[in-house]
Image 1: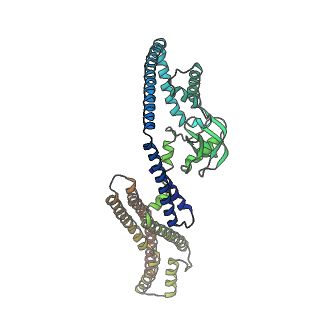
Image 2: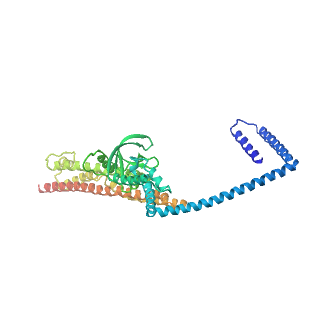
Image 3: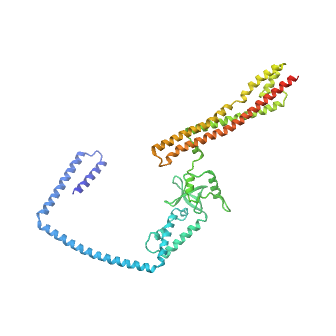
Length: 442
């Protein structure tokens, strides 16, 4: 009765959870009233049992008689069980004797069926031929001897898997998108290695028995091969195969792209790359400007008329306008003109040199900050999971690469621009020296 009261109490409490503003005092009163009623019923039943001693003895005798009857039945069943067990052992021994070498054969058949069932469950061929494991389950999981039809089906399934593993097959199938939406597509299956659709790689889902798009495709060169292979109808065609049946492809699609690599550098990486791009653009602009000035100076050297659109022409114009008869005065005028023309030719060299020097320093700064993040992860989580340290290590390595990637091209560009600038300044010095020598000869 106490259990009934407890269950009733729990039901009432559950009702209070869903009722709207139930009066708790009323609930308490109902529980108290129920307990009183159950107590009265129990007391009445106990009084009735105690008031009739003859009925007690009658119930006891009936219970003993039933116990003796059940014990007799139990002894009979136990003897029958023993006899059945002995008979079963005899039959099993007789079966073993008659089966002889076939027993080992059927054992091997069960083992092969179990192994083949596991292989077919993860085989990409099962997307084209579903429900191939039902017969194998009947052989591998059943203790009875397999029938001839089951043995033939096992042989057929083995032969089918071997034959299909060497084929390139085109067939229509329903595939799932990365979001799980089904669609019809032309599937190209390459043995047991890869499946393609619409120029993209697919993966096999053993739990559904269907093909699905990869959440992320490998890089472009593999997709180009897949698209060309899917469009070819005869002859030979190149294709990137995954001999591990999906393991390598799964790791390949997890490889970060170029943009993701840049993002791993963090804020310092962005600053380094922006600085490098700006420096490279500025260096190319200066190189183009110096090339233009060089062409104009070459034209000026072949012309007898001073053209002030280039440094050499402006120096010739200074000589023509100066009308200096004295060689010393002419030399002073030319020195002043060269002094005005050299700074524009050397403009930007210091900036390029500075950016080329700052790039590795920023990379070193990113390396230090990345290692700080790594050691913080180690201090918080230990070294049990390397993935927790991957972020800091990636930042350290990527920023180092970015710093060097900025410095190396800028060093070459600075050297080229500086060389071009020195050549132009040397031409100015040579031409002015020639003017002075000719004036001195006159």
